[in-house]
Each structure stands twice: as C-alpha cells, then as structure tokens.
Image (cartoon, rainbow, N blue to C red; front, side, top):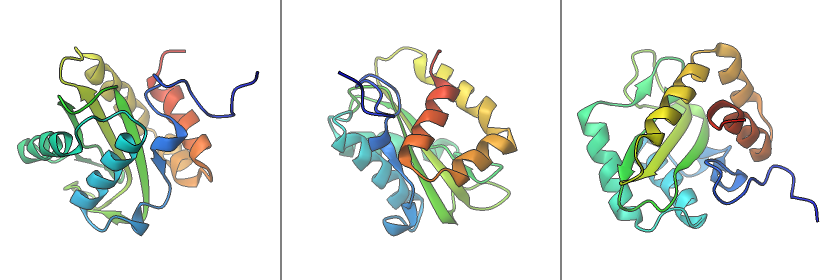
Length: 161
C-alpha cells in the first residue's frame, strides 16, 4: 500500500490539511487569520479546545506581537487546548497586519503545542525562524501552488530528516 503523496503521518507537525493558500478568502485581520488556522488544526483533530487555544494565542500576542520582517506572522502558544504539536500555514495575497515594522504578513504560521509539551515548540520556532530569514525560502512558500508543496517545504524546515 503506498502513501498518499504529501500526506505525512498523523504525528507530523504539518500536513496538507493544515495549509490554506487563500487566507484572504476567510481572514481580513490578525484575529480572523489566527482563528482560521486554529480551525484548520481543530478540523485535523489536533486541537481539543479551540477557545482555549485562541485565548492562549491572544495572550501571547498581547505580550509581544509576532509579526516578523519579511512579511511574516508567527503567532504561537502552548495550550491545554492542543492535542498534538501543530504548525498551520496560511498565505495572504494582500497581507495581514501582525505588527511588523516592514508591513503586513503574507505568510502566516500558527505554531501550537500542548501545554505540557516540553521545549519542542521552541526548537521548532527556532528552526522555522532560521529558514524564514532566507528570502529564497519565503519566495518558495509564496510561489508554491499546492498545499502539498507547502507542507513538504515546511517539513523540510522544521522536522528532523
């Protein structure tokens, strides 16, 4: 039996079901973008309590906005509402304000980890940040035409080979 192309196992940090290539269709600001990515994670069975995760992400955003230079939004939180470590992704053609100095985010990542998940989320966050400083990696994410392409790029960036 062969695997479905691009479909990682259920414990992979990112799968095609966690990718939205048209975030503009459902999100017009930071809060709706975060809620959309949380919904993707919930629909994939990775979140047990959307409201708890949203509250935890909002609390983290109040501490320090998660907009990064290069058109990136990277909201993240550890939460009791998370079952499995998750990296969800949304791409916005118009951009969404995440508080970065250089303008709106076209690439939005939601990193959600179980509250008792140890430091794995920090390792993932660091690995993703290292890749995102490369313009070529950001361009690859902007030009990817399928969720499978995005999931493969992200798995290559954050999961051990």
